[in-house]
Length: 459
Image (cartoon, rainbow, N blue to C red; front, side, top):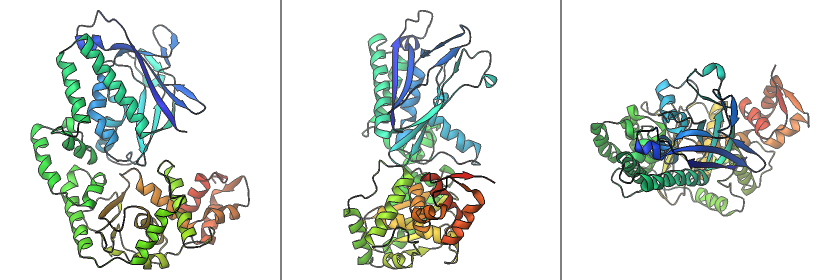
């Protein structure tokens, strides 16, 4: 359920604190999330020394403001998805450094709040309670709340920006000219001002999963030359699909795909007309909807445009003929996280690179062809240059494209008919339903889960 994050703080005199900036930002802090029908206090804590429960924590707010200023682009400019299980520890650590409050320091007691991007416009904010067995004797408070809530990116950005701006105003009033306060002001200005000389470098770092503030001066100076070599729509769209170690190879791979796009023949007018009709029809998937629902909406809209029953399973041959994608072999330098790379030059046929070209009859290949059709029909404009990377490291397009393919290959009407209004379905029955539809098993399972058709009973 969508909601809001609320940060409320009140300054407290701290005569025992020697650092003027820390003393000026010593405060009580209350953090709440408010949904349509619910409210949770993230700072509800058990004070282990006083043996009391309260709804605020005490400490300096300066480290939180500094963290927000340094991690701003990691949160709002990058589109990197949360690391999947099994990714290297350094990848998971780099993610946590810019997405979890627990990386703030200097004695500030903060809830374990994490910001996870969902698509291009939403965040899932989730927080965890303290586990008494995992804490140590020096931790004064135990956090008692856990949960999660969806918050629109604009709402979250506004709340956090207001918090940093208010704290800078407090520092200006109490300790004007303080070196640490001035450093926060410069960092915040760099994060917010596109005219700042470091703004684009920090943003570029965020989009390749690198934290600017951990780089040496030499490494920072190398960034402009590196970024200059990545000047085509596919490379720009695919930065989050790789990492700094393979960035140059990835850029070269994107450049080769883009060369193919530039030399491709004229695109099919039937494809361009289909795209125009899909975009002009009321009910085009809204960006405010959940990723799986957007994909489901897109599949149904496509069927309506082609005058097909919503219970029809898509075989893909007709639409692939309309689009005529130029399918290219995989490049060895492409990141293992990349599912597909797609792009086109305005007015030319699209070029498409899948992770591996397999027999057309294979179930996996059918799914990939359906998945990639979402990009070809619903992202970009055939009349303009376009590039897109479907990657497990990028939050957004891949999950929508997967849901689109799921609905085309395993229509929810067919799944509901097979379940016949039962409250539960055995896990092994899912395979039987999938076989009857000639669809991937995972597609049927996701349809049942997303649409809450029945409870899946694991055998």
